[in-house]
Amino acid sequence: MPRTVSYSTLVDRLLEKVGVIQPPVPVERIAAGQGIRVQTSPLPDQLSGLLYREKGAQHAIIGVNSLHATVRQRFTIAHELGHFLLHKDEVHVDRGYSMRFRSIRSATAEDRAEIEANQFAAELLMPEAFIRKAWKTHAFALDDEYSLSEMARRFQVSPQALTYRLTNLGLIG
Image 1 (cartoon, rainbow, N blue to C red):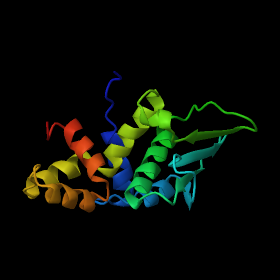
Image 2: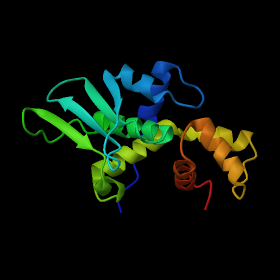
Image 3: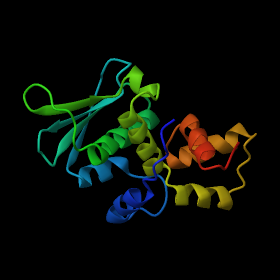
Image 4: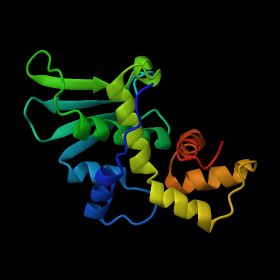
């Protein structure tokens, strides 16, 4: 099992740069601030998104499957932004460009870079400080599906992503 890496310092800097102090995190604005253009387009269902970065370039394009739910698109943008920031030494193929695709393999937690990008995405969309504040401020009942759905709506993430984040933060069993 890979070690858990904290990305909170990097996320704090990104949030501070765009003045975000509460959810939802404007992930597209954060990507734009890093010189990344987000492009949505219909893609095959099993493809959530991709990162295209020219070799040596400081800018990139994140492609996002427009057929997926908005919360999935937001997670995909955050995930690909994680690759952009964390995995600068990509393996380059063909004409000097690097592409990273979200795939079935990436969802199985076999690829270290995919695990890291997922952890970064969760931290960016659901910063620990924001989650803990929401948790204390509102009496969310874990056995109440409505409470969990309301919190997920507030963060603009899926209830599944929120549940996973709450579990990783030790707020739920």
